[in-house]
Amino acid sequence: MKKVLALLMVAGMFSLVACGPSEEEKAEAEAAMNEMMEGLDAAMEEVAEETEAVAEEVTEEVAAEGEEATEEATEEATEEPSEEEAAE
Image (spheres, rainbow, N blue to C red):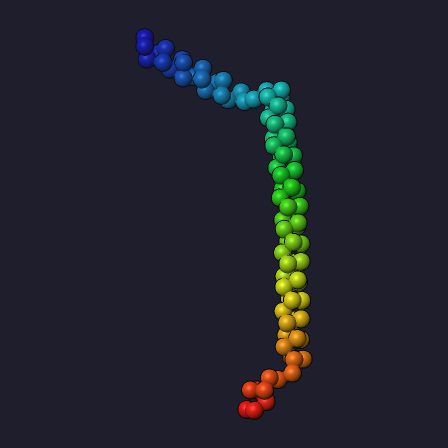
């Protein structure tokens, strides 16, 4: 008798699983997925904006350093040679 009841229980579980989700459950799952995707899109846009801002800062710093190096090289090139350098 236990075997028959066990078989009926297993068959009942399989029949419930075979039915699949209802239309309402499918709509809820789709809405949840869309909400997650919108959140992901918003997060990606935020990261892109932050990355762009950091890239602009770094570019400005590198440009400023390059200008300073150019000015130093120009000053060194236009300086008159010292007496020791002229003697050589």
